[in-house]
Image 1 (spheres, rainbow, N blue to C red):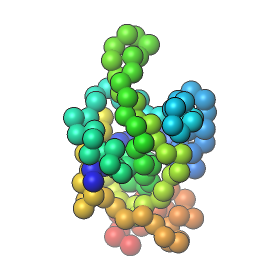
Image 2: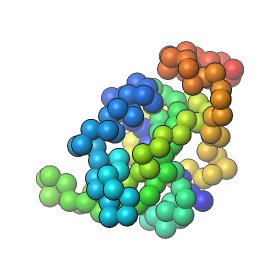
Image 3: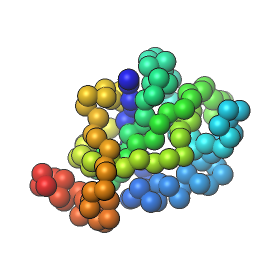
Length: 141
């Protein structure tokens, strides 16, 4: 299974991402799933079939990989300026993952399952403010 990873710009926490995705401008109707959160990007992934076999979009927030959402569909889209773009239609469920520091990058990247951080299960880190999560992660704790 293949995943994607992408930075979230202008968001400082998973809670803020969740609230942003509930806005109508950040959703699209899908015939099979109803209203879904979307992510706009420029490039269409060549390995889209592998991603749609259960892959997720991992999100980097405040310098840490903090969560993921399952990719349900990938569609081409025409942007407001007339250029072609891509939409990742995501599951509304946001799954927190073990925080992992990551340097900024542009666009999205492929992320093999073996390199993806594991899902969090009842960890105390989910209740810490993002700046403390980042400090503890950078310290290796």
